[in-house]
Length: 149
Image (tube, rainbow, N blue to C red; front, side, top):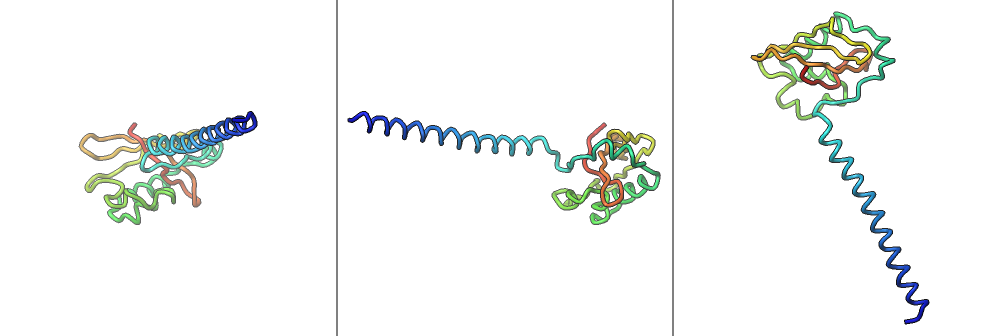
């Protein structure tokens, strides 16, 4: 085999290896991002507003009552109005936001403007307390995600 041909073969193998590594890196990082986002994202989650926005907006008694009434409603369409638009459809619709017979009471005085969070008590058998992460959208406070306190 001539030196020219040998260099051509080696160059082709190196090029193929480089393409394979590039494909592995691109496809592997996308798969990692997808699996990480699926694992880290709760079923009801949207990014909360920037703290500077939240600090400027009060959370009023009317806001608390509106969210409570919506979440405590038996109608899923009414419940959905308490949620950010991205969450108004999805798996929660099959069972509703709260189980039957369970109600939610928001502690308006627990509002933390820097984080746009408020706490709420649920009337389940354990009297669970939740943190509601809020975002200001459509001219009102809406729930973006929740977690047990």
